[in-house]
Figure 1 (cartoon, rainbow, N blue to C red):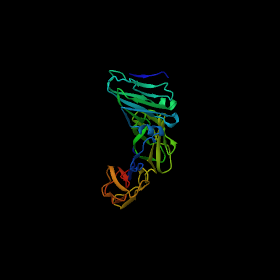
Figure 2: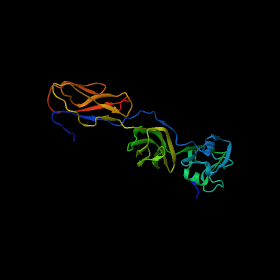
Figure 3: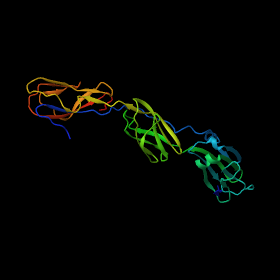
Figure 4: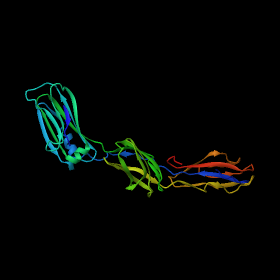
Length: 308
């Protein structure tokens, strides 16, 4: 028996026009997700108990302060269901005085595997007495302590602009109670959490690699070097009309990227250049145009990490 006792695009006529595209450079970073936090001293000690076999007995108390938020203790009891002469087999997960207890008492007909669980709220308020008596019907009792604190297993994307405003998704477990996400200690905004995912918006920060921490009512988790702040990649001249060209006259205009990680590559990704003009891999538009008109095209710069 188990019981719980009380308790639009611009156009120009007669000269070249280019739309230059430059987005923030992103760095690829290997994500190292760490556990939420180390198990408490009490949790470690309880897991060291292992299994108590018949005949056997165990009793020990663990104070409330020795547990951390999000931990719970479970006793797995294997009962043979055979009435014995002592008829006193029992398992208590309780306060030190045996009150406010989660109790399993062996009795005839209870053959099988049974569990008792003391939740985190109980442990943090009362501490825990683990008391096991296994001389008759109970064959074995295994006591385990586990955490329900949040863990983070992935962050997407792993980098963004120093200006902030990057929408990130953090995947993991036990995330429903997360109320705060920080990047190097600076709070993110628009935090929304489910059991397995958190969305948030990054704050502004200086360039560099930072830790990301999630916190809530059942603990916290930190991803070391989890996000990289980068200076956005830009191109010059900016989007808009380029200096005019004259048909039959040699023309040259450099397009220069900055930010991101050099070297940069350049390519026409939309529209078409005027006949006679080409774009070099180094970003220079050159040649002798042979046609008169307005030509709209997009040049995209790509950095060493294949980001644009």
